[in-house]
Length: 430
Image (tube, rainbow, N blue to C red; front, side):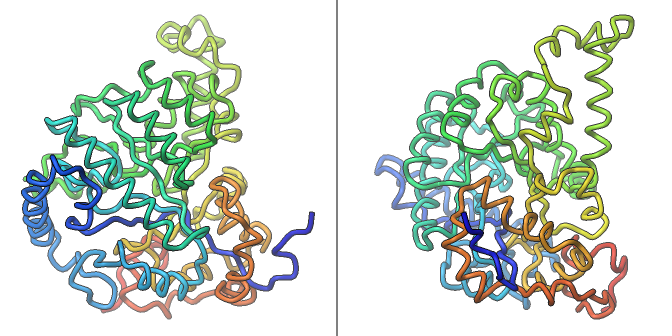
């Protein structure tokens, strides 16, 4: 079969990390009448929460080109979104939730349920409303958006049915696996009760996605140090899901299940996998050590070591991949890396995606680049490469452009909001 990208002098860009969501008011049509009164109250509360967040963040919440909102209507305005992402050269996107679903107890609910709240039925209604909004949003640009469905861990049977609904309604991004941090009231991800969720994802070929930010405990945001502690630890809390699923046998029981860790960095993976392999070896084979005493029964049924499960079933959503982490691609596996722009977040690469791609990928084999910036995501999430190739021929950055080294001195100060450029300058010029 002919490769639809053969002879193309441009890259097909698929970002594996974007976010979208309705304005609070826009979720209303997706809720039953019985929730409308409480929904009106929640909309008012959301406005107050947003106001407080802007006060906490101050000038750091200023978006691109001085937009006074953190993300603005980029979340739901299809025309604006297409115009801006196409200017970056992007032809398709994997979409995580962004704006919090109705009745969310916290602003962080966009990354998965981290705080149960008190009203399970109301929370579930809000999550379903957000899923139905996202399905409609993806249909506004058919074949170019893979939306990720949200579930609610306390509602296992309902979540299984929601996953089936999502598959039927074209949410091809798979499932957002919520976090279950200590103190949340949610059973950890290795709890046996979640087996039906993992089973249906494997059955339907729906990837499990876990995004940094959704698994953190309560940092006590009333303290001035809280945001700093959150930034220092946020990715580690997401990494925990990897060994929770590995060592509880989820990957063993479901060998075709695919798992994606997004916006968690890349550089951590080789060292962590080495450490997990060492733990596994001592738990499995060394009956004289404490690791075997504590972990031997757990790993007895594991037929592969952690790095082998990773190579078979795991992927890293490498949002704003910096050059030093790109250098680790062969240790991680080029086919395991999914580039992401994090649009429309203020720390994303827009509108400096082309500069980012040049900085990170100049000198890298073009075939490897194409896999990381598009083909890996297409394979995992089911994008039609042949259908997207004409768009890439028109919109994508040229291979010659990305192969040209980028001088960090040419970066505008506003670009340094993005971690992709962190290695270039610790103190950008004003």
